[in-house]
View 1 (cartoon, rainbow, N blue to C red):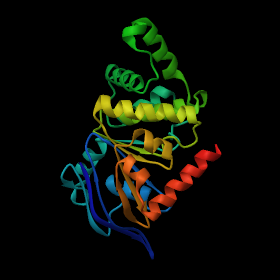
View 2: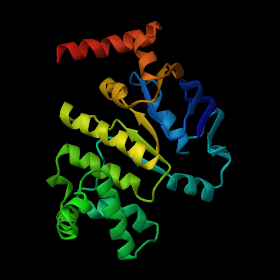
View 3: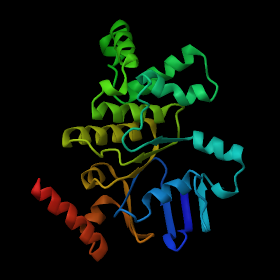
View 4: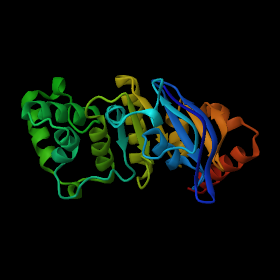
Length: 263
């Protein structure tokens, strides 16, 4: 479980986090929402140890992140998969190279292991056919074709899936998604939501999703936390989010509902 206890962070005179108390439950999908500048991305950077809080504590599995040695912090990060906004694939690399780069850079050069992991994660995100239905020869052909493609050959939805596949390498316990449906049309957005749900259930992964897409929140969230001015102004399930009478939350939701009616 991930716990944030009274976490504060300032950058000069700007107080970004002002006493965050939040629990990210294991095996669930938690969505973090809020207006731009509310502290969502800063919160995420504290969890992975890229930033150190001015006050308070961040815990992962009972261990305090800011008191970890570099080796301990490295081990924790290896247990967290990170899906960057826009997928952040390397344009000069193939799909295969993009997926296995982390494993390779950490010293794994055995091609059988690298190939096996690439097959596993690309299958997990729905980019390869079910081998039990398609047969080994067809599966291997599709794997070879997909592996050789460059990001420029992929649709937006496929790029997102490759980014998720890369995050799944090494079977992390946690996976963080930074705006996973940004830039996608409604059909592809819904497919990404479905994939996040399937991965959470199939792999028992704890998912943390930073998003502005309220359709996604209502589709996938087990748990929702809304930030406002550096504080948690709402925490609960998606149904409670929809019916709350808190004025800050209601205004945020009403803007989403207005946008939905205009579409």
